[in-house]
Image (cartoon, rainbow, N blue to C red; front, side, top):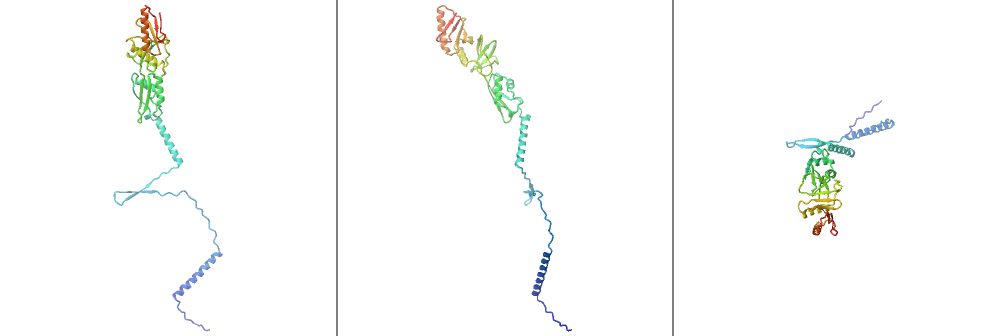
Amino acid sequence: MAIALRKKEPVSRSEQLRRKRERGARTLNWTSRAAAAHPAPPQPTWEIRPRGPAAKAHRMRSIALDNRGVEVQLPVLTLSFSPRGLATVLAGLACAGLLFGLTAPAFRVTAPQIRGLQNLTPDSVSAAAGLQGSNLFLVSPAAVEIRIREKIPAVRSAELTVAIDGNVVLDIREREPILLWVQENASYWVDADGVFFPALADRSDLIRLEVREKGPAIAFDGAADIDPVVVVNALELTVALPSGTRLIFDAGHGLGMMDPGGWMVYFGTSGNVEQKLDVYRRLIESLDARGIRPGMVSVENIAQPYYRR
C-alpha cells in the first residue's frame, strides 16, 4: 500500500481570517437552530408597583463665607398646603384671635375719660354709660348715647370715641338752663327747647317761674314738656318788667305776673309781649282814672283785654 505524502502549503493571513468567519457563522447557525428546536420556558412577569411619590430633591441655597471662594450650602425648606388645609388653618387662627380679643383683660374698658361737664359729675355720667368692664370691640356709641340721655335728662348729646390704643373718651354736652321752674314744691331747670331736667345746683341767674295750681306733666324723656315760645316770652317779660317781678305760669292763662298793686296779670303764650304790656298799661290807667281796683287783668288777646274785680 502506497501512501502519498503532500507537502502542506502555508496558509495566508487573509485565508485564516476567512476560515475563522465561516466557522463562526456555522456555530451561530447551529445555536439558533437549537434554540428554535427547544424554546425556553416562559419567564414570570414582574409587576412594579409605585411605592409612593418620589422624594423631591431639596433645593439648596449657597451662602458665601468671608473667605473668597468658600460657600456653604443649606437646604431650603418649602411649605405647601392644600386649599382645604390652608382654609382650616386660617379659620383656626381667626377663631383664636377673636376669642382672645373678646376675653383678654387688655381689651376691657376700665375708666372712660369724660369731657365737657359743667354741672354733672364724672361718676354719675360713668355710671349711666355702663362702660365699666365692657369689651372695646363690642361698644356701640349710639347705644351708649341713648342710655346716657335716658338716665340723665340734663345731657343733650354724648359722643363716644374709642381710640386705637384702647382709650375711651366721652364728650358730653349738657343742656343750658334758662328757667327755674318751681312746681309742687319741686324745682326743675328748663332749656330753650322747653325740655325739663332736674336742677343740679343753686343758680341765681335763672328766671324763676312759679306754677299756680296745676302745671304740665313732666316726663324727663328728652322731649319738650312746654312750648319753647313760653321760654322766649319769659325772657322778654324779664327784660321789660322791673327787676324782681314775680313771674307766674298758669295752665289756663299762660304766663303772668303779680302786679305790685296786688292783682294778677296774664299775658298768655302767643307772644307779642311788648304790645300786650302797652295794652295793659293803658287799661290800668283807665281803671285807675275811674277808681276801679281789679282783681285780675288779662291781655292774652290784645284785641279783647278784660278785667275782673
